[in-house]
Image (cartoon, rainbow, N blue to C red):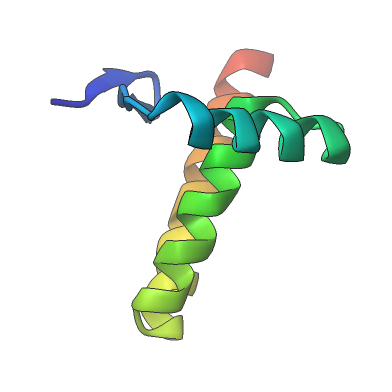
Length: 75
């Protein structure tokens, strides 16, 4: 069950050891944190499985929430 953390959701995933090591290698090659790479993988997969309009609407809504969060912190 995901846990809300601010405007994001925290979700725990379990990976098999050797496939996770592949993820670590890719992350190192790209100069990314493993969690950032996994998030990119998930978003890429989601984008390829839902209508483009739905994905763009969700992405825009998430960006608006982020801008609002930053604005509140600045105030």
